[in-house]
Image 1 (cartoon, one colour):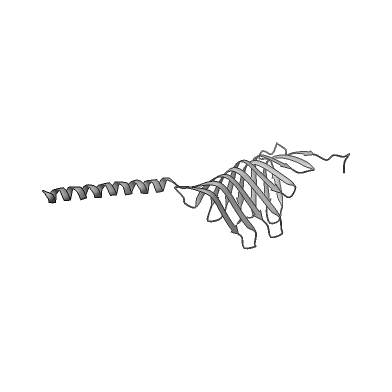
Image 2 (tube, helix red, strand yellow; image 1 turned 90 degrees about the vertical axis):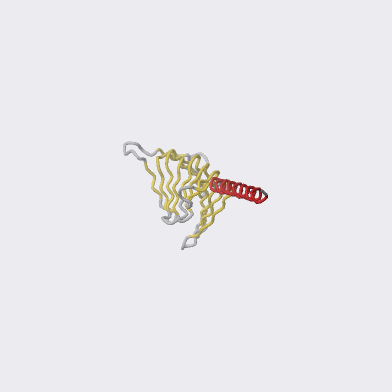
Length: 179
């Protein structure tokens, strides 16, 4: 009788332990959220890319992708230029540092401000593509377009509309009375 009680007690104990272990593993797999995300990388030329987010969630299908919330990024160029980017959301690839910024995207570069709904940044391709409701402004001009492409190395910029019959809108903000 004592053998039976002993066997039954430890067998039950083992089953409970196994169930708890499975639940813990399931919880670990489901909680893929990182607080205060901070990534930094540098290309072969010495340009530095720094990314901050209040929260990151690792993609369960591809652990190289992180979905970000409240995103800020800085691109520090070797020539001393600084490009700052802010957005509500982002998607970051930890292998190649490509980042997609979305919702209320704002870019500051020198005395220029660019706003849009979507930005695709690639450090490897030296490209920054801003699209959807693009508004480019500085002290002299206000420009509205569908897309704007910037080569971050050469600073060459292309501004265009998707439909050829539509035109980029440019408004001069020069105040001729004050120089």
